[in-house]
Every structure is written in C-alpha cells, then in structure tokens.
Image 1 (spheres, helix red, strand yellow):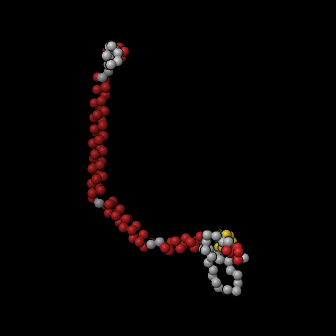
Image 2: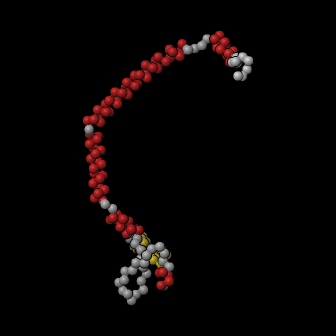
Length: 145
C-alpha cells in the first residue's frame, strides 16, 4: 500500500447520484498532487485525499476580491447611467439626426444632377468610330525611341 501511495494513489469524493446526493470514494493515481493526510487515527493505514472539484472551485471563489469587483462594477454602471442621461448625449443624437437628414438631401441633389450630366456625355456614333481608329496609331511614327 505504501508503494501505491508513493506512486500517487489518492482518494477523492465524487457524486454518485445527483438525484439522491450519494457520494462515493474514487481512487486514482495523481502523482503530481501532494499527499495530504487527515491523521485522525495513526493506527489505521490512510490513503491521502485530494479536494473535490467543488472544493477547488470554492477555494478559488473565496480568494477572489469580490467586494472590490462589485465596487468596480457599480462604478462602471454609475458611469454608464450618467452618460446615458447626460444632456450632451441627447444633443449629440439630435445633431446626428440633423446631419443624416442633410446628407440624404445632398445625395438626392447630386443624384438629380448626375442623370442630366450622363445624358450629355453620350458620344455620337460617328465620333466613336473616329476615336476607335486612333487606337491603332503609334507614337512616335518611326518606332521605339
């Protein structure tokens, strides 16, 4: 038994049934876990135990600075509430709404002006034929420089 314990044999309580709440003792090897003894009765051979997952979680939660975290969360929430209720934010939203309406009006005006301009830009077919002939011209006429 001593060799098994030195090899990492540990006992741990596990939930056997969630419905009934019954627990069972699980034995497994955890060579990386230190041997922790209860030492209630030194005449009885004892298998070292390791904490349950719930005990480990509880220990971590106890070490958290919960009061400090809650204070910071409260400060952040107060800041958000002050920002949302500020007259500056309300004024900014109203200004943004006005600016969006102005942009919409500008887009409509530009759109109305672009359609007539695009109609003026249509090239007559005779001019297009003349321009297509210029694609074959080479400069300089004697070849490459």
